[in-house]
Length: 169
Image (cartoon, rainbow, N blue to C red; front, side):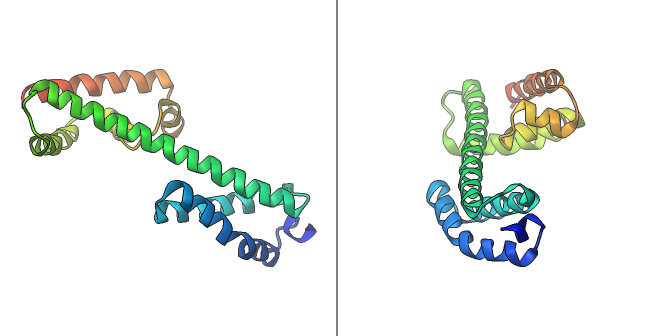
């Protein structure tokens, strides 16, 4: 155990060989997306390597791997849910403008909307796209080094401009 605490790559490799398969299986059963499962599994082992000096036993490492990968799955679902909510809001806005619109017409309007999104001021557009990716205000604020209040202000500006654009479609 002391070898991994010292950052020995061969010790880490042994742990990786032992737990990579079970962690990947665990994650893939939860997220049901092989690419996402691979990313989560890789990130879990990257975190283990980064924190390698904190573990006293193999049991601690195993617990860390399962808890970390489970938490990453939860984050994945939260992000997916936020992305879906934003998409639904956009579809709702589009339908509000024309209640008789079918899904194909909504898809066409969505393409136009994304094109019009490019006309927003840079930070407005950047924040709105990050919201579409499923990030929350705190994550956006941290990534852009701005306040969450500024994120909300820019989001409202983007929404108002996009609603105005949609009214003219």
